[in-house]
Each structure stands twice: as structure tokens, then as C-alpha cells.
Length: 335
Image 1 (tube, rainbow, N blue to C red):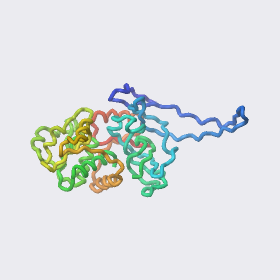
Image 2 (image 1 turned 180 degrees about the vertical axis):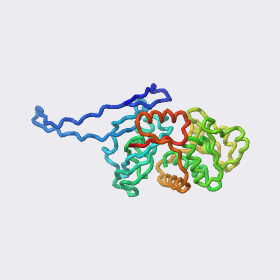
Image 3 (image 1 turned 45 degrees about the vertical axis):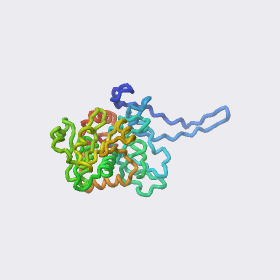
Image 4 (image 1 turned 90 degrees about the vertical axis):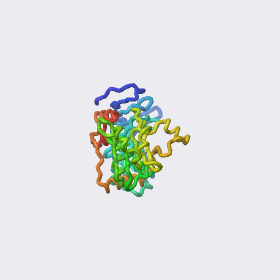
């Protein structure tokens, strides 16, 4: 198996590396004797393994593609869980930004799946159903378990725009970072929610929008500004100037990525009155269903770059995602 060059664990620009591990062979089935008398050594059942991306290293910050990761088919299924075979799973920036301590060993936060087994208390899905959601054990794998409850960026977008931004029929919405996965979700959901004017701006390398002239011409023009960029790893700060584009009194500035200082201000009650920071409520099954319904009824299509699930494509996908020039979502197709 190929192995990419791995940087030091403390480097914030970590890379994917292949770390194949030998698969152990089952013990011999032949009889053996001990000093205490004859004994039969029964064969140990071979454990199921699968391809997966996992967090490794001392700090759990290195992302490794492995082919012999234990899969959940060997584990006891909880009454409220379902076992799914992953059909496709996307990359998200949090996959490489957070360590094992916060997100666990498995990598990936959302997936499209087929139900293979259901827990004893699950009644709303059955074996063979096609589902999507947030797996408990990491989505970038061939199998996963998930709570029987669209993907993270659309769930965050719906909660931000509908609940906090009050976007509805006739609203005007500005989406900052519109070419990325989160921004594209904001544009599509705003339209699906009935907004009459949706404007998207992004960097000059993917579009020509977002100039100072635009700001001057649109002071007080928007009901909601959905900022998916500020406080990112490159230090962008639209939050200091773009709130002027909000309608006075009623406009809402929704910031998706928050810095520690932003949270400190919020806890201290010092955040601007028209600014909201979003904390994703992941176990909202009704919101997942609403996302699916909105996209289906609107006929809108999500921009996807679909790739095979192997060590080379995963490594290239992570590095491409770090450039922040990806349009839409990078998705890996399993099998």
C-alpha cells in the first residue's frame, strides 16, 4: 500500500497517511495438551474488518486510511441504534480540524446509508431502507452505527437560517463563502425557504463577487447575513464590516464559525444584539426530514465531487479541502 509523507504531529496542516496493520490469522484448530490434562482449543471466530479513516498518533490529530479497522458488525447493537452499510460519505473541515479527544477515533460526521440491522426499540426504519444521518462511529468507513433519529452542513444551515435568521418567504439573504459546502447549503436552503433575493459572495479565485462597491450599494438591504467564513483558519473577518448590510432593528447576522473570543463575549452577554452564533443540534430528526423535503420539493441539486474510497483519493481530498477552494462537497463512494 502507498504511504504519503506524514508531517509532525504538532503541524496544524496535517496530512493523511496510510498505516496498514497486519491482519492476525486465526489460532490453530489442532488439539493441545497442558500439564493440567488435555484441553481442546476452539478456533476464535475471525472478526469483521473494513476500510476506514481514523485519527491516530499521540494527540489523535493524524488522519490514517486503514483497511483492517474493526467494524460494528461484531459489536452488540444498542436497542435504539441501527447498523448501516455506508454508501457515500463527504469530507468536512471539522474532520481535520478537531482531534480524537473531541470527535473520537472515527472520522466523518455524515453519510448516506442502507440499513442492515435495527435495534429492538427502533420502529421508524427497517432493514433495506435508504437513510442519511450522523453516524456514531465515523462516517468515512464501510459500516457504521447511527442513532435512529441532510448531512451536517445542511442541518446547520437550516437551523441557522430558519430558526435564528428567520428566513421565510420574501426574505433577502446574503451568504458569505457561497462556493464552499456550507455556503452552497446556505444558498440552496435560503431559496427553498422562500427567500426572494439570495446573494452569494466568495473569494476572487472562485468568483468575482464581494467588492467594496457591493457593500456600499447594499447598506441595510438584507434580512439575514449568513457568514460561513469568519474565524476560519486563514483569519478572515467579515463580521466587523458586513453587519452594516443588515436591515436596521430586524436584520440578523448569523456566524457559523466562532472563535474562543466570540464565545467569551456571548457568555458575558457582550455580543451585538443582531448577531447570533450557531451551536448545531445534531439529534433533530425533524430537521433532517425538513432538509430532505425542502431540497426535493425545490428541485435543487447539490454540487458533488464523487471519488472512490481509497488511500490516494482520501489523501488528495483532505489536502484539497484545506485549500478552501473546493466547490460544493467532496464525497467518497464506498464499494
